[in-house]
Image (cartoon, rainbow, N blue to C red; front, side):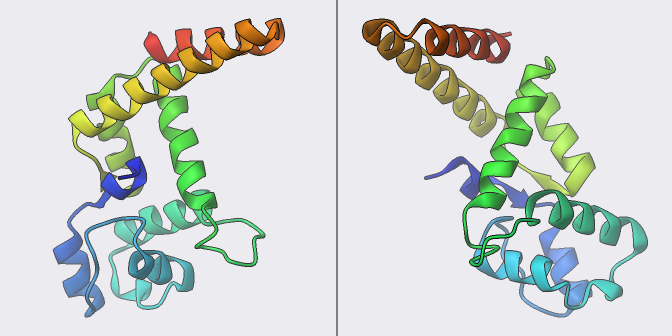
Length: 151
């Protein structure tokens, strides 16, 4: 299961009630992306909620791909966002708190921790392969990125 499949809409039942439609719990499910991408019914939401949803759409759904929002760009942008928060020194719980404040989405702390651990393991593999291939530049990039994620 991809990490972005474990990102959920905060207060999704309340939002579904306000929008008078079914809204899945997953932030990156097709129906949720459709609602965000088309903006149908957002006028029914209070201004704070609407602003956060529009921020999410602007920050993660804005790309020129023909298949947007199903092109994978929203998920990649969100993963980059989470990695940047970690690079700023935030731990898993703080990352959950920030994503919740910024975009009204959340994840379980353990899922964030697992994602970050997997990212570090992948960087270790990249570093090892780059060393074997004699690619010092790539090895150095992977080592620096690993250090940023490890804290």
